[in-house]
Length: 297
Image (cartoon, rainbow, N blue to C red; front, top):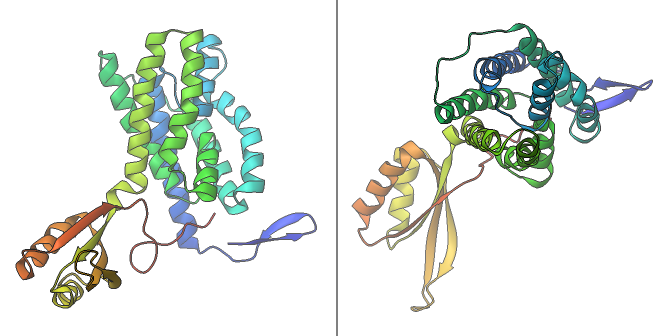
């Protein structure tokens, strides 16, 4: 969705459908509530640090308990919101402002009882799972909860850097400072929490929809391609190849399949040609046709 200036005010040129708007609001609200619940039920009682801006907010809160995490989070987000407005997209920032508000209010008023897990390692893992689910759900929307979310979206949009790794990198700075201010033990448990959350974020955003690229070199390329088209209803592309030893031309089959289809594809291939040469690669992201669309902010 693009924007235009109208007397200094940005006005959307393409109206978002009510269904899309409702979906984004639900995702942001649900994810923010889960994140706030995890922070108040595990992270704060165990005195863990956390991601970027949230980690800074928690550190200040531990040093000055009278200042709430929600208020600190909202204040620190102001310059990042400005970055997002000019560098990411206005539609994204409308939703992100809403996400910041929901999380800040939830962190202030949502007070669940601490989860009864005494072991700090298990607490860090559980906190990472809960927080990662919450942040991942939010990042599946057209907005975020602010903080490093804005930087993660910006880096992903500009340089295709995976969001989870952006969290891990910026959290390292916060954890290093936490080790100096609090203790090395606190920083190490927090690192486990942060790493777990980053892995869960990637899983929620793309991991459960991950595709496999498959390359097939076979004397039965035409028959294999036909069966993939007919039985799996997946697209197939022929690439031109040439054997270095035989100097003979080869048709290399390329296709994209889901994890659940991979076993069927291999059975199909070796049923037709037991000597087929098959290469299977992980994909970072697949866009186009039925595989997905480019995300617009």
